Amino acid sequence: MSAVDSIPDSPDVFSRPATPLTRADLDRMPDDGYRHELIDGALLVTPSPSFNHQDAAISLLIHLRQACPPELYVMAAPFDMVLADDTVMIPDILVARRDSFTKCDLPGPPLLAVEVLSPSTRRFDVMVKFSRLEAAGCAAYWVVDPDTPSLIAWELQDGAYVQVAKVTGAESARLTSPYDVTVVPADLIS
Image (cartoon, rainbow, N blue to C red; front, side, top):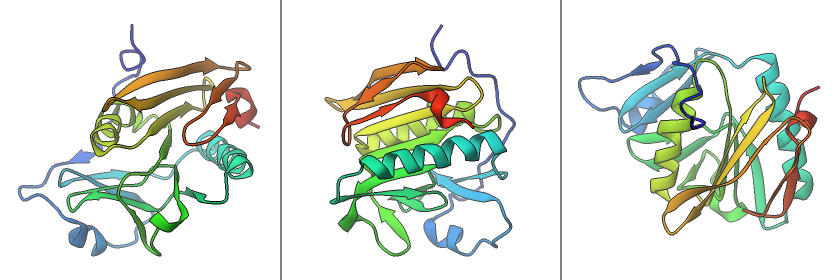
């Protein structure tokens, strides 16, 4: 059974309009406390994350920032990553070259995108976001499950993601893309 097969179905948080939405439509949406993302013109609206989600995301953000070389930057959500006019995603953590960021978004794929899984978005993060990031040329994609705790990491090789790490609990993953860092999933949870 693959990692995707073990992820339970999520609620319907994906809304496909009659006419595909664009970045301009997204910019006109009200600030209602939800995360709004576009995937191929379809709107994805998700609720605020849980305590475990935020705990893992913040711990990983701090860990990545401590190891980050000066020419790169680690950014936390919410921050737009624009892959196309109809595809604007908000990964939990982004790593890109400092000079790639603008004041309002990251125009293009990052070197690393990280999603911390939530019950409402797990399948979407592992399937849809995975495929969009792979197609866009994002060098590395990680998913962290704060409830297990676990980490799966993929790196882009010849245009396709290859799994380079899958660890749980106190196991460690030594990762090299976009820079050298060791991650222990259990250390991400208080």
